[in-house]
Amino acid sequence: MRKLVVLALLIFFSTANCYAWGWKKDTGTPLNKEYNNEGKGYVGTLPDISKNFESSEPKSTKPIYEKSKKFNSADEIKPVPRDNPAFVNIILKSDKTSPYVNDINELLPLLENILICIDKNYDVQKFNAKVYFFNKTVEYLQGKYKELPESSYTSFQKLLTLNTHTKSVATLRAEAEKYRPYLAYTGAGYLYNDNVINQQLDYLKTEIEETIVVLKDVR
Image (tube, rainbow, N blue to C red):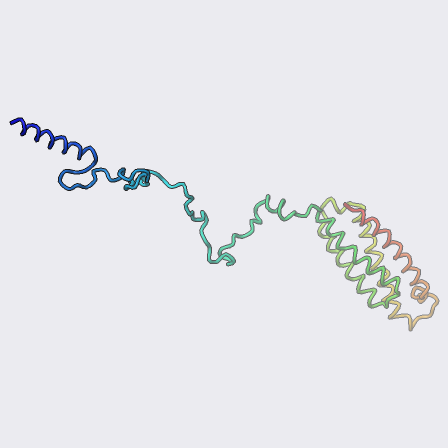
């Protein structure tokens, strides 16, 4: 009987030691094989924890604007807001000069052309053509500013006086070309004498130069 008890104890302790060293009783395989390789670290399967965290890597983003296939098309380009005062005054830099000043500036070349005709002694046709264009321009301005304050300006009154003088000289030269062959240089024919015409042209030249000075001072 004592021998049976000793044998049972030996079998019990032998079985306990096997489990302590990590071996299953029935198969003999390691119970915890992740840790049985001493010095090699953890060699088991790690749990998947990526689903609980968001990646810090930057994600590709789409542009916030819509792509236009017809960027250069007239249908895709917005019209210039010319009705917007801010756009006109700031972007387009609207003209700060008055209409009267602009008209005067356009008139100055006409007077300079008449001066050239006098200095270079152009024929009657060329001279009268320049004067005619000047006369028509002044008549237009006279109607435009008839009831406006500009009509009383010194520069405008100077233009009206010069306009009358240029017409009279142009008429004198045209009549001289027409009647001089038939008139003597005495009596009525004296008015068409070359000396008289040249004198009138000198007077006109002086008046034009004075008027140009006045007009260039208009602001």
